[in-house]
Length: 281
Image (cartoon, rainbow, N blue to C red; front, side):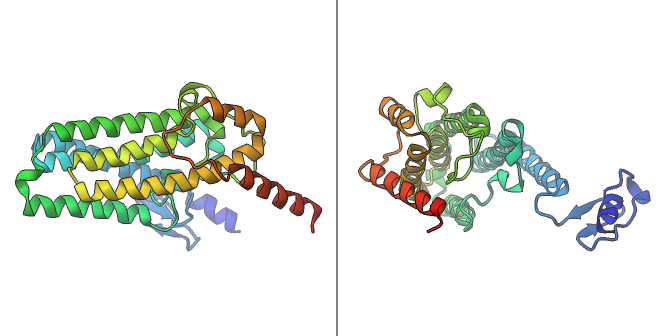
């Protein structure tokens, strides 16, 4: 019965001939409706549409206001929205089995810290534009920041496209059947290109806005976060791939300051945990 209701709710009929769904999980109008299931096609399509509108609005503001405070802010909004769109598209095109609404990466850490950080960024820019307008005038620093952000975006997207099904937005604690050690492409030059790309993108955008306080905070917080995350990730990769990853790690540098002192210790811990789990003791 419930499946029949859902099937009728998603009827291709449009306009005033759309049937009102029997399921209470839908907000419904004769023209449009929203399925409250998080990963529903409705929600994904509406999110992508919203991002498209934001990107277009940001570009229009940048072109309309030109080389001004408002123009730079419009460009900032467009670049941020484009980042979220590319995050989803990279997964949908090259890793479709893991595609979900969360692939847009609006809340990557699960604690809304990203949203808070972006809100602080916008607040600093607006307050400083009002209080210290002259210091916020677009300059070569603005261009340099934008270039760094674009380079970061290219690096991150290349990392996701190159890794394909082996890429995961979260640290894999169990090796999937299709998980391979990627050592070609951009991974020949950097072990963690997606992290480096995001770091450059985030700091570059704050430089573009001339947000001194937020830029420093981003450098400190992201540096700590990625150092901690790569230590955990490399421990699991060493456990998954053994000497293959050890060799790759010795031959390929990383701009993330990974502390290697306890990698072997962590590998032994992981092995001990896995052994205990398999024995059931």
